[in-house]
Amino acid sequence: MGKDSKNGGTTDIGTQFAYSNTEVQHQIFFVMKTIKKSLLLRQLGAIRKVQNLSSPRSGRDVPNQYDLIHENGIAFQSYGSLIAVRMNGCLYLTDCHDYSKTTSKYATEWTGFSAKERRAGLESGKFIAIVDED
Image (tube, rainbow, N blue to C red):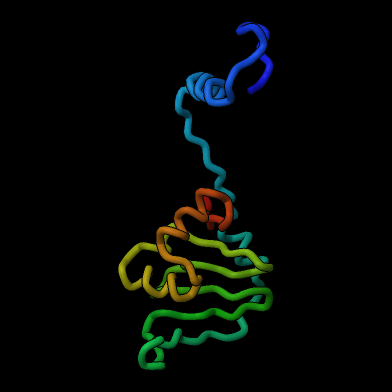
């Protein structure tokens, strides 16, 4: 119970919360952190090594799925598209992280997060969205 001068001194918290909700008019807010792709690539530095991802079942190289080892981090590329980057303890994702079943499968393996978790992480600001220049 909290003090409220209008109602003789007390209002329950549930009523206060309901009142606040009607004032907001159901606005939905989320925090999305972004970085421009060109800036991120500059920060990664030069590519030192390119290697295929390995299949978790067979151990063989997976065609068109690559680790790009840079001076300052590591990137995941599917076919010709940048998908994700790990640098300085952060995970960066492009909007292609769940483009196809195959890309999503290897993005899940590479990041350790499902497509649903990646989307939620981008919306919450846990992960950083890589954006193209406009």
